[in-house]
Length: 224
Ligand SMILES: C[S@@+](CC[C@H](N)C(=O)[O-])C[C@H]1O[C@@H](n2cnc3c(N)ncnc32)[C@H](O)[C@@H]1O
Image (cartoon, rainbow, N blue to C red):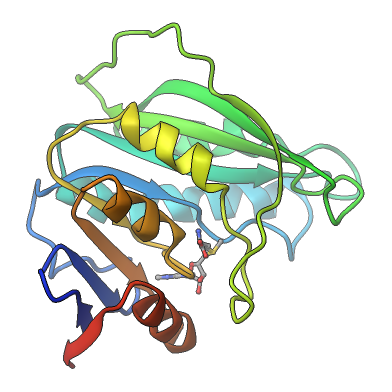
């Protein structure tokens, strides 16, 4: 695994598959804030359900291990019509996470204005989970934004979540412990987390995207 780090050690990026987070110590992470690849290539409820199950089971196992008690898991998830019906992805993912020991604490929306597609991914859910047994007291905050899709880095093939949304979610979350993005893409969560004085850990499978994030966040390769 290739590891990149900032000079002050507050940011670390692993280039690898985040189903395995073995370099990250147990209960060391305060917030997981991430946007997994959206479900765009398939159609049919069965395929959408398998995707949701995979997220909760194959990735969620390590999320549970590294997240501190009272830590927050935020998922930014797009939803869409699959040609036959609106999928309702938030319900599928919440159902699978619930079965694997998580409880949904709040739900917000970021609605894209000026979307590229006619309907796909215009709605983005902001889902906050905690491990069963650790609750967030309901707050009066309304988590709702209408914002255009931000201009991503020219070399990134992925879209990013708007920075004001990420900042608000982090400010509403557990303050102690690092922020982890297990699908870090071009590192937008890292930029926001470091800007708020948080420590940040990113994991990215694609070596080109990992190199791009390393450059954006001024990280240097430390070992492989
Ligand atoms: C939706 S993008 C994230 C975009 C990101 N929020 C940004 O600011 O660029 C999802 C990222 O997850 C990465 N990815 C997909 N499967 C992965 C895996 N198993 N482990 C680590 N990264 C993965 C993709 O390569 C992609 O860069």
